[in-house]
Image 1: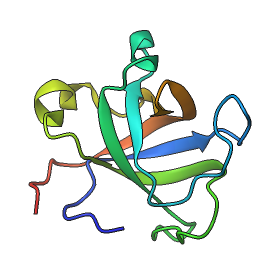
Image 2 (image 1 turned 60 degrees about the vertical axis):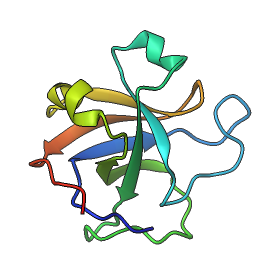
Image 3 (image 1 turned 135 degrees about the vertical axis):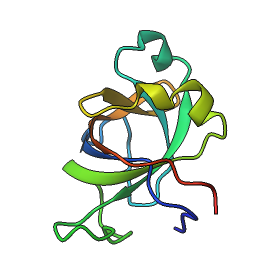
Image 4 (image 1 turned 60 degrees about the horizontal axis):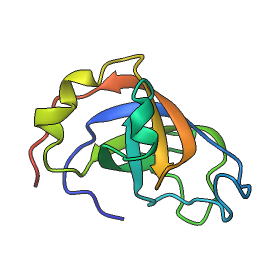
Length: 122
């Protein structure tokens, strides 16, 4: 996985365990999920943005791509939707809650823990 710019924000994410109502196989670092703010109930049907989380190990480096994601993890979040700045950036703030989606299924929940200056696409 290669990201051409720095992260937009950092978050603490709780990955829901695999089961028939959320996801069958486990997720791994490098996954690209839909993103919806927790207060946007309608977003459960239509996600608002694509996001590329880079999950971090205990030392703050990228988690190996062969380790299944489980429990609560830190991640650097890279927004990949081009209209992100215009439509949603003002809503990203420390403490903001969100959901990670696969279609209409919530597969993880998270909270913003840090916001970084917006980087230009490289």
